[in-house]
Picture 1 (cartoon, rainbow over the protein chains, first blue to last red):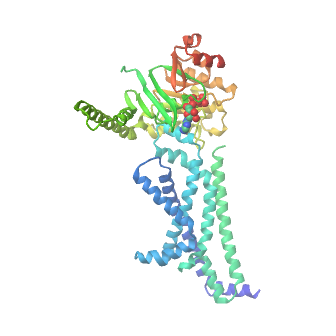
Picture 2: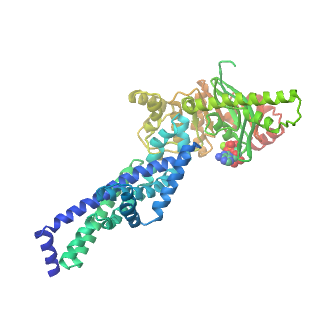
Length: 230
Length: 292
Ligand SMILES: Nc1ncnc2c1ncn2[C@@H]1O[C@H](COP(=O)(O)OP(=O)(O)OP(=O)(O)O)[C@@H](O)[C@H]1O
Ligand SMILES: [Mg+2]
């Protein structure tokens, strides 16, 4: 009991909740903007890879994209954080807020995964759909946008949801580059009070609740999309 | 060329890798023609049809749609001649000139054909708007309602207003007896209904010619009739069409020209009565004895 008391006292009376909320907001910022950046990058790469052309410029882009995907999928996110924060950014003279850096790195990281997810989703749409669109007179891009992508995104929504959940949980390592996220905030409380069990239980429950809420919203979206076709 | 030739195909070749599927197809399709294409499975009927709207890029030959090139590659022959041209070191002037002429001819043709391809990169889509296509597997857009399926292209490509496009769609849907299906999604329709919607979707662009690739082959037998009736009505209204089909009854009754394709070429063409009553090609005789 007393450990709960200690935690509550520290959390509420001594302002621990402020750090917690600050950490929570950073976690949310990194996850949400990381996802958005990842989605945009993923779309760009998937488009480059799927575009039917022998244009040398696009072929070069494709090669770059391949290297990028291999690099970010082939190394742990912690390594990417460390390498960019302590290595590449200082080298290039880039001096950003650590949260912004984290957003960029998580965006780049999830972009690599997302491009593969999107590509799979696009390839899974029946080839006849592209042909039907083209035969009506739509260009490649407009067929993609209006006919292929809506179907592809519907198919990959569950996977995208999982990607978002994975991304959110992975942000728990950003304290490696001195970002105070929700994990770090509760870690500080634990370190200050020498009580570990309660803060970490609170931490676990925090992640669990967020993930459950996200899952719930994904379900609703899926249901709404599939209702479309009844 | 006379004005009423809609599609003109000359010496059309198509290879998939090493597999030569079309080996020199020549045909002019005139306004109002209803051309039935028959032939054994795998002889290249679909490939031929898909070349006509460039869903498939041919290897060599020419296709003109309403007098405009939508495909041209003749330089391939000059290139072959150029390659096999042996120019000896001590060649006389005549041979040298011949070689130079050939080279110049090739360069000129290449320039012309590259210019056509470049033009088509921008304008092929505009030509395609006037070539309707109906697929064996319908290929309706499952994420859109029937009405949206039909109005998408007219609204986006012909800049019809939403109201006009919908009014037109309703009129066409009524024509095929599906006016009550405007607001449902394709997954709720039967195969025959889907195919009628697919025809309406193509018609909504007011095409000058319609290409049908075995439009009834994926249907249960009891639904074949309803789709054939729609196509027959269209033909009677004067729509120009090319129909790849296994329905010999349709070819006999509705088409004004029947074509037999085999081994990548048109083996026989005739008006339907003579075609079926008096086939000349051996393979056609054999084919007809199997399907009739
Ligand atoms: N995209 C492709 N790549 C490689 N080979 C192909 C491709 N499309 C068709 N073929 C081959 O070309 C040949 C002709 O095919 P096509 O579909 O034109 O025949 P078809 O006359 O329409 O036959 P069916 O009556 O079965 O529809 C076949 O041997 C087929 O395997
Ligand atoms: Mg076929």
